[in-house]
Image 1: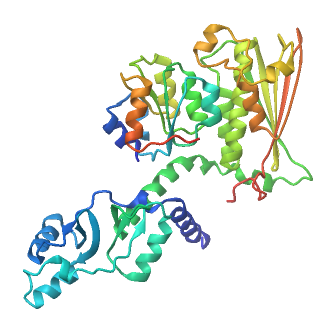
Image 2 (image 1 turned 45 degrees about the horizontal axis):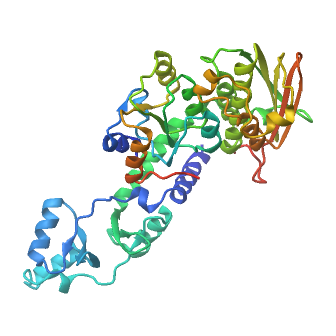
Image 3 (image 1 turned 120 degrees about the vertical axis):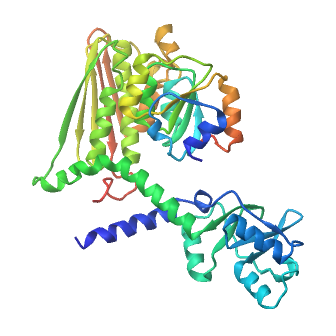
Length: 114
Length: 315
């Protein structure tokens, strides 16, 4: 499923790097611990997290993730947005809690990767 | 000049193995009922601008009917016959999880305009035409082309161009302690550099993860340090160096979940005690030496030929 379709179906708000929306999402991973994400998330996965600081951009970029979904309506700080646009990392936000949005993604057919 | 088209064909063939029928199919299937008349079928074709559909009875696919069946019915004046009597009952289908190359083969073999796509339980999940395949391949080539724009640098031949019994490239990165805003820059730059050199993406992933964790350790615990990567065609050796404070108990630090990180670092999602175990998991060899008050030296070796083949990409 394309990121664009997921964004539309799950009602996500695209905050950065909208040129990445045509990417084909290969699965999902959720954690707020960056080391877990590094160990488990795969290329073109969608990462669901509550973290919104600039370091999530580096992690997503190193792993070639499809994008980051920041949950609980958490505000991105300016440097996160700037870095993400610079490095072409698509960040989406949702007011929903992590569990809720993962359920929605699962219904769309996005699966865990482990 | 002769070589280029050949490369492109290879890339397309590769893609037909990588992508599945499910990637290319259209999930919206227009169907007709076996009880519909051929006249109704004609309307379905006209309205949807298509040339054939699967035939469904009680939710099960029982056949396929095409414009050719309609022409035959027209010729014999049987527009009021039901689809069930005029359809082709022998249906060739494709599985959604089959590689796309199966679809390509089938189109060549059967000369049909479309194939219904079913899941492994036999349920109709989509329909695929040659147009779908073309569209999917073109889209994918476009994405790959954009992603691989990086390879325009064509630094990947550098090792071939060097004449020496042994050759290594050395890259150094300075890391500033406590600067979380720039944390990850060194690993990101090393990753980009290795991509430009044409290393296998799986190798690059392992180097990127190991280096990032090392970089974060410097940022979290020290006033700064450096990362030195020595890159050879067959292996990448990385040193992560800092001047303190040092690790009192290296064995303990290596245990998954053990961490001395302060709370505010943990709140950022670091300091879960997973960094060093992650590095170990990504490395072929790892050596950690530390002296309290002096500093820490972490050495990581990752071999570039994990699949037995030459680890660097051709071309």
